[in-house]
Amino acid sequence: MPAGRKPAGWAGRGLRKEVQLEGRSSAVGGGARPWGAEAQRRRGPTRRPGRRAPWNRSWVCMNCCTSFPSWRLATCCAPPKWTRSGMRLQGPRNCGASQMTLGTQTWKQYYLRRSELEFRMASGRPEDFTCRALAGHKGEIDDLAYISTSEYRFDGQDKSVVCTVSSDGTVRAWDLHEGMELWSSPVQSAALVNLVAYPRLQLVVTVDERGLIKVWEAENGCEKAAFLLPMYSSALEACDIPEGPLLLAACAEGALYTLTVPWLQLLSRVNVFPGNPTSLLCSPDRQWVFASTQNSDLSPEVFYTQSLLCRSEDETPASTTLPIWLTSRACWTPDEAARLMVMHRNDNGMQLVITTYELGSRKSRDRVEVLVRQIASFLLPDTMMPPHLMKGHGSQVILLVSGSELVLFTIHGLQLVAFQDHQRPITSMWVDQTRVITSSFDLSLRVYLWNKENKFPVLKSCYHLLGGSHRWARLAQFFYNATEQHCVFVETEVPIGSCGYISFTKTVDSLMWRVTV
Image 1 (cartoon, rainbow, N blue to C red):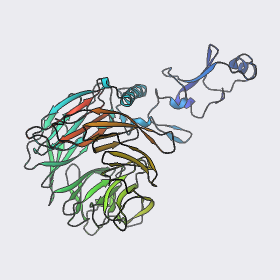
Image 2: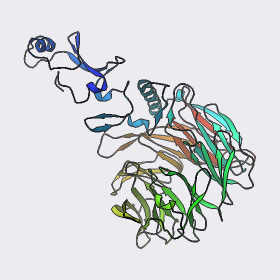
Image 3: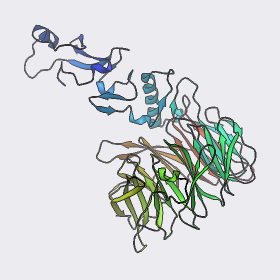
Image 4: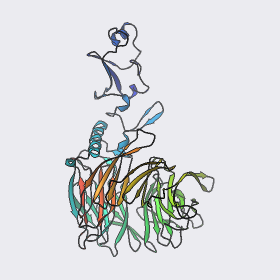
């Protein structure tokens, strides 16, 4: 950009431009553009054609005097979002959907600390990781959820808390920073099999093998409410929408229950797949609910979430049926909240197909009509084993796990890359805007980073972390908290009488966690 010309909005952000000319510097803050002798003085001595003066440009914050190579990179005193020329600009993409606790730090402190965490996460140096073991459950751990909020605090007051449920009939909370148990619930009458968390409300919802749903306060483990399903639950989904937090529970009889949180009042009951266990999958913006029954001739359905709030038996929720069957996997794309990718069999039931749909709604006076449009579809290669894990990235990329292989496709079927870094089958996978992490039966975590310089994102294999022991049978579940750079994976089928987890943590700030006994 030529000297003296400033982009729109730079002065409004409290910045001045600093120009260094052969050892001298001057600041252009605002006002009229210099001309005549003043302009010649600022340009420096006359130069011969073809030669350039040794000058450097930088942008300097007038509040804290911090220099940046570009005004677009100024992150010292600016808020996470700002407006420039009618455009909405975001803070660093690697921070995720986060918040900062007011009064605890400046934006510059946050940025520098987050940059350090991201660097250590990308480098994978052994000295940045430590291993810690926690134990408490007397049965198999069946599920885990993070209860920590997404606030960034670097004043030592932050906590990373997870809750676990086990076949021993208890729900427990753990402080991962301190490596200790915070509380444990009384032993329930049946084994707990599933849980979901509401970090904003500091609540945990569990369900046992008989279908009894309970709400617990995350701070002290006090029971708050209960609701009994007619049969055991096949799925739980936390759904926090502007109208209020909801709990979606699928019963083994094929019914979908919508309950309020925290008091578990019944809002609606919908028969989706009578007599068949139902799986649920909410969209990233919680506006859509995908319901399916695996490997069945029944076609999956997509519900408009707000229509599930109806209290009358005569009102039917707005939904649409997808023209496919024998559904096996599905996922939503993070960047397009209404874009759904479904893995299913083709018409003759011989080959696996991945079809991508876009959803919409059209409202009239007394009803809502759900619109669906197919935008892409492709056949998986015959040589590929049926994938058991499926995730989306951005709006165009699909990640599939088949055995020990990780394969990336576009929604149109172009294979981008394939990895075979694990020695044994992959058990779980985490995908976000910055990285992909996989866990495996070989007792390792593999870390991949995204490179988005090309048309389609390119995934780069970086390093792996080893841990655990072969005296434990297998790694079952894997969880990751992008806010605090923690990851957790759980070992099950453990020897009778002991079950718990191990944490992987960074030596300065918690970075990764691994769960086992």
